[in-house]
Length: 209
Image (tube, rainbow, N blue to C red; front, side, top):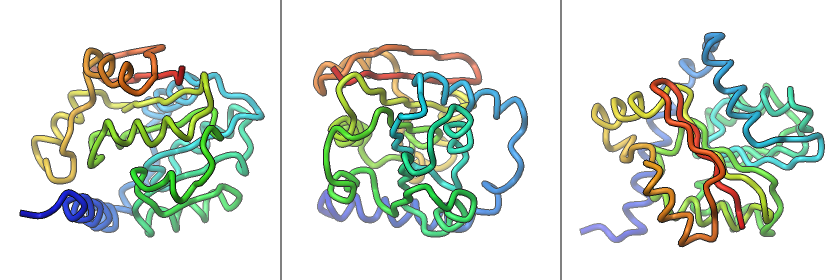
């Protein structure tokens, strides 16, 4: 039986390979209705010109244009992703953003000092994580007190469930129900500030206490 660390590595390698072969799909124009939802996600964190952002599973940088539209400076955005190919395209689009090839479960060691970000976003990636609770714990350490962690998907829980059912190795988890988030929040010194579960939209915003 594989050890936990081996399983984590196997999972990360599978994610890298999956997204390596699908970069072109993520470079296609995003429909206006989806852009409106991702803008809504970015706006949920009350960002300002001085905000420092951690974009987890940044991919080709789909969320970054939204942060910039809210006045956030490129130099104050850090995008983290496992895929070299995704990050290559993101760097071309946003050359002044700080991009890191890393697993969020290891990113605290890569990023360094705690309490440095005002908000962290997990958009359209939370179901893909190896360990959702640990990812929240690691991220919370990087967020300033009263900072936000946003878990979101512009197509909602049903879409993620369909992905999970079709390929559970790549999407091993569903998006968390509110009661599950409440349990994690209590254990990790977080609180739920907002929880939206609509047919085609999901957003949970946690605050660091």
